[in-house]
Amino acid sequence: MKPYGLGDRFREPGLERSVLAALRDTPNLYWQLLDTLAPGTFSTEAAVWEKLSGRLERDEAPAGEVPAEWNPSTEPASDAEKLADLYQRRLLAEAQERLAAALSDPAISGAELARQLEEEGARVQTAIRELESGRATYASDLVADVIADARARYDERVESGKPVTGIRSGIPRLDEITGGFEEGLYLLAAGPGVGKTTLATQVSKAVASSGDPAIFATFENSAHNLLTKILCAEAGLNTRDVRRGYADPERLARAAATLAPVLSRIVLVEGSGRLTVAQLRARALQAMNRCGSDKCLIVVDYLQLWAKASVEMRGLMSVRERVEALAAELRELAARLKNPVLAIASQNRAGAGLDYKRGSGATLDSLKESGDLEYAADVVMFLTEAHDREATHPARAVDLSVGKNRNGETGRVELIFRPDLGVLREAAPAQANGHAGARI
Image 1: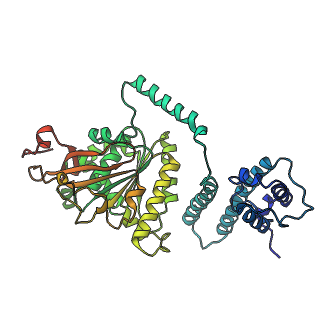
Image 2: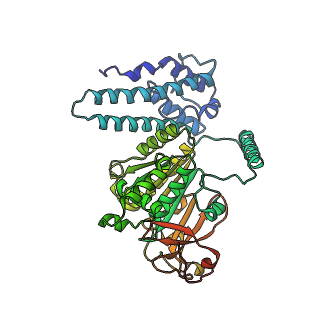
Image 3: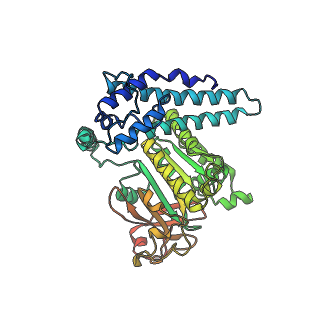
């Protein structure tokens, strides 16, 4: 005999039977209720539902699947909504039971329990969201929302006198091309040593300076190293000098004091094989709540490293499959939070650093182990060495190219990189024209 579970409180066999009887008597109701009656909605009469729905989808008349003595619902649409609500409550109840069992296990640490809590919540939310996926929405039903959004943006532009943009990156030309970072997945692809982490930390700093939080998940650098890079860039110090003991610690302390409000809005998350997208979402929600903001930027440094290390994705055979699956999850995360996710991706050596003017440098097929990565992203950017410009050592000329932009145009931003200071800046007009002597 099956033991009683908390989820059993949210089962109503009589309600299930009345809805099935209504479908038996009025088959056309099936197409009206299909979006509501998702798989899992029926629990006690799941077998009857499976047989009946199969016949109705084949446009066949019911043939005894539903007993004649079951009385049809007089309000089938309303009752179908009740069944869907009961299903969601069963999911929550079952999650609660699993957590309660873990709570009683002394072998499970408090930190592990907290992680399980986050993952259970994410699992339930995913299941509930899947009830919405695939639903048909008529365009006419969205008209009011589209016009309201356009009106709000128009009013904001008139009031401010400036075009409406997403979260600003701190690089004016990039914001001009992309319109700022809006909801979606942004990929930053680059080869080794071109400045991809520097660019990501600079953008994070710019976001935090505007009052919004930046959540930086790092798999390549430790949180300690990232903060050192940020402080050195502010203080004008070489990180190598810090490591060797030549840098004045008072300059770092002054930089930290100057950046104190900004640093309080940058959340550094140490990447590991146990980190999940659900946990990253939890960190983002915590940060937005703490900062009193509905905006944030999530940075992942970098995508291939996370995919290779992920315990959650060990069931997938190849790194390519893992990268594709992780990118899809991150895009879904951006949609759920209605905020941007900036993921750094490794670029093939063969595709990195080629001449942009020949059209072969910033190409979508140069993404390493990417599979369909470029299709999942809303915006794809490439950071490559600029062979048509010069810069005085130790500065280096690099290009930030927007190769794909679902929201608008593409283009190139000419930058000067100081790897010794961890700083990227837009090239001045003379520098952008290829003149030597470019400095920061």
